Length: 445
Image (cartoon, rainbow, N blue to C red; front, side, top):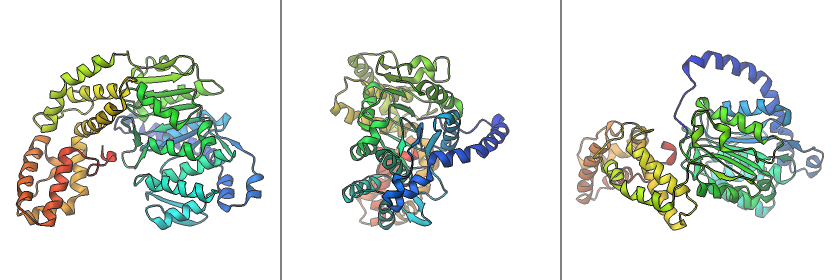
């Protein structure tokens, strides 16, 4: 995933002044590029009104889940203003999973709100049912972004918008994209969108995935299912830079090289000499895949097997993570990702390693996850400990080793108790012990 970061303090004043000045001109551009007239015409269901609208060329569609999505969208829009700017899909308001259409507020967390939103789209009954399924299959805190994505795809499908270039930005482990304070979009959802809106999906020729571990050779294969007519891809086969520590530099070069291009000059060397440029991976129709120096699958699997004890030390709490970005567990995680990204890795092996990948990334961010666990399950934890007659520790301050000792104690208490609150406590601590997604959402990482 990109680094957890903030805008550099020394640049804050300059950036604020620049952003303010840029926004004064960008707001108008975004209104035009966003093409509210198209959205209103489609929502009205008036085919005559839709027919009177000239298609708008949106050079870039940007889908950003991170805290700095606005900054990335603003810069892409400015760089590409002469060719349609950038249509941005991102969190719009303070309240998650809520959209407003024609003055009507729709809560996408509810079935009523979801149905009301789908009814505003120009879809056949069959399409509407499938779009509703996609919306409902989107996780919490990302339904508002999916609503925007559906609108963009419908516009492209009906010939009202072009989206030849697309950017996905946020945190990732290679199978989804999410934000620190936002929801998660599984890449499988984009495959479903491609099946529902094939004309729209086939418009995308150039893709940039500004996210960590999104660029292994095997990992990249999923993008062709999402966008079947791709001519170039930029992603990362390691840790990607954050917005202000390199991502914008890479985005600007990508934007320049994909303007009126067949993508053949999109190559790994374009990031040479830049921060984390060595982690960039590319694909184009002429050069194929370019990434880190290849290793045989046998060598990778052998190295991974030799490091199994490393994983176990951190999993059991024998050793604590000192730095989430470096150290033996991070190196182990990189190995897992390289095997997952290798073209010779079988589907069954990939499924197995995907579980290990998700467990390992959660272990790396133990100190980030445990305060969220403490806050997110405060009521259940307190009820469970009260029923068990045991003093609740502050999970946000427990190291992995101390937690595993506490977990063992709770397992013994639960085995001897019939209290529902204790059973729930046992379920939660077991989920934290196993780093399961049912208890530890990906967006907590």
